[in-house]
Amino acid sequence: MNRQLLSFPSQPEATPRQPRVAVILPCYNEAVTIGHVIRRFRDALPDADIYVCDNNSSDDTARVAREAGAEVLFESYRGKGNAVRRLFSDVDADIYVMADGDGTYDAKAAPALIEMLQNRRLAMINGARNYEGEGAFRSGHKFGNRLLTGLVHLSFGNRFQDMLSGYRVMSRRFVKSFPALSDGFEIETELTVHALHLRLPCMEVETPYFARPEGSTSKLNTFRDGFRILRVIARLVRDEKPLEFFGAVGAILALLATGLIVPVLLTYIETGLVPRFPTLIGAVALGIVAALSVTAGLILDTLSRVRVEQRRLAYLACPGN
View 1 (cartoon, one colour):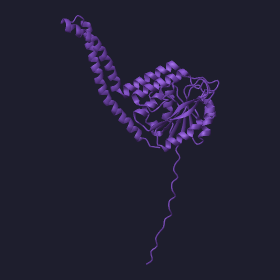
View 2: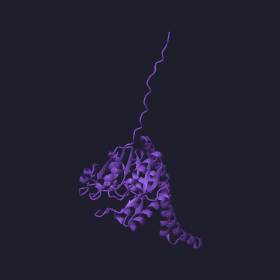
View 3: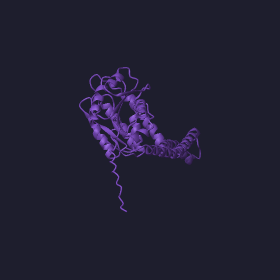
View 4: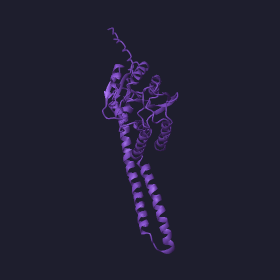
């Protein structure tokens, strides 16, 4: 009996799905520039979804953004960190391009950054600002940026030279595992420390940074926001590196205790008397507090490692690129 082999048509190869790209723009009173920013990103990334988070603006930012083709979200709590948290929570995409709505960042750089993020399977690319033209960056801001970035280098590593850049390209894993606790401009510091402390695959690429267009004003206050960022760095060191933080506090207290008790001991050795009991009591108290500080650092360091492991598992639990 003749047997015939049945042949089945081969299945066509599945076309790889293009990643969903979302451009997210936190804005506060950027009606002058937001329309132009949206059009620039639309030209650079024609297939991307563009979202603007109106951070309780008092001008026509929302209307201009909507007319330019962006989807507008609203966040009533003032502060860039609050707007970014809303965008991270409500926007669903595979790749996120975050920039400001003031027209200072170069939208044309976004396609190359996205390609780099995909090819190298990175969690985040930081767009380091390369200042184009006069007035792009005030000298006080530049000095503060270097100072604050240097402080982060001391505790978390030297991977970024422009920690405060608002131009970031991020994977879904990075965005959905980021806790976003900050309220204001210190959100960039928190993003950087999150990447450094979890040792996520990241890199920094220089991108052009332009002066604000005429009629647009900066919302950043050099001293007020600088102190807020400094406070956040101290909090992050305390929470993420407790042994270093409390160990340093303990060392300072121990030095003070030593400085107080040495003259008392020398007097006792020479005369057999302790004429300054308040100084002795103060030195002993400082020594006890120093020991308690180091002990607290050791205990909290163990808890910090557990939190890092949990955040790392949350990062890995999100679908990759």
